[in-house]
Image (cartoon, rainbow over all chains, first blue to last red; front, side, top):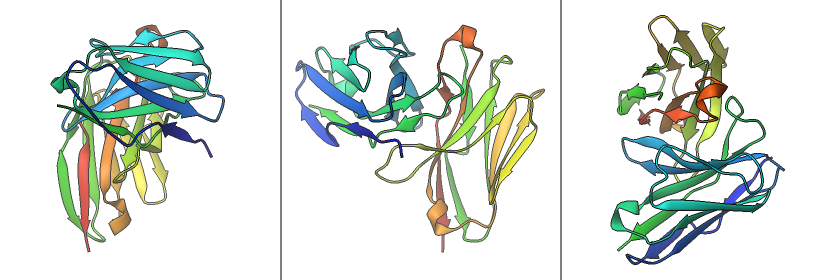
Length: 113
Length: 114
């Protein structure tokens, strides 16, 4: 079974802090994604990566950056956390792009105070 | 870009009844439509998908229908059971030219009452 793990289930940070969310997948998938989940808004794509050191902006990249130094690891960085970034963050991976099944981690609930 | 609308946002059904969730999409070039189920405390998981060259697909108690002309697709769950209680998301995938991005609907919280 594909396993996608995220470094924390719950995280509380202060406004202005730099925040790192880590995601690791164990199935040698090419593609990795970071989503933000808010009630009524579904899942919105922040960034995705289709190869090591490659990244593409999603629909809501402002205030975020990403890093993919190794194939299995994809990090989401909040350079200066703000209260409007309080949300559930979901990481996913897929073997193929687009029409391929995405496998999600359990999510990180981030609260910025 | 693509826009996916999902209705209803919440759905309460009696165990054994059917549940229907409807989604509409805006980009006529979209050609792949997956449905994900998110149980409490877990990430979403793919339960069924349909491609634009197919009108209907079934997998045991779940089925998905697609109307390309009207640009809408629906998820049908028959004989609902308590374990069907979850949040369901529809999604649409446009052509590769639009980028490798799924666009998700807003989600439907389904509660199956025993």
